[in-house]
Length: 233
Image (cartoon, rainbow, N blue to C red; front, top):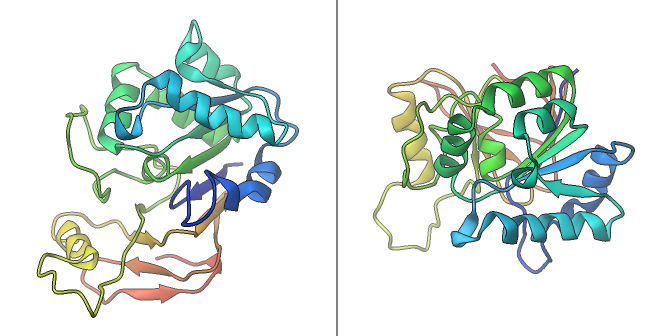
């Protein structure tokens, strides 16, 4: 049975890295021995080692041992034996390209379907959707496909922002961009505000955290979804 924890962001304003998710992370990974961090999204030009040190260090503070996947001798074998994986945020296109180039996406998809605990934040949550076509990131590299894990039957838009009524900015809103996506794609899109996350158990999806989420379907008006179990169609 699939088991996923998908966060809009790793850091909320005024709190340290991952701090607001501590209890969720402990519930998700405690008792699972072989944990790996996937650092391929590389936020802000960090090296894989720097990014892994940040994430693994935080997990270590909480009594969880996690290693950087990039440091394993055989990455596919490491995934095959993993009890849990955390895919960090950064640039979604960089993340996806490296997973395709390393022939890891299929193995990661298989392990998620088998019930390996998966956690993503930002780009790592984008990766769980059907495609990465609703990321906010610039396409600074070109993956061989936009197809992602498909662990949930919709796309995710992390860091979802509502229009600011006091802003003089005349550019497109996030809602406008998602409507543009729906001019060419049919899958639903969940706008996940910062500080919110999804728990996925099998086919059941629950919205957690203090905020509602915004649900977009092609050809229909967007709706607000309250925290709790979601029925998405």
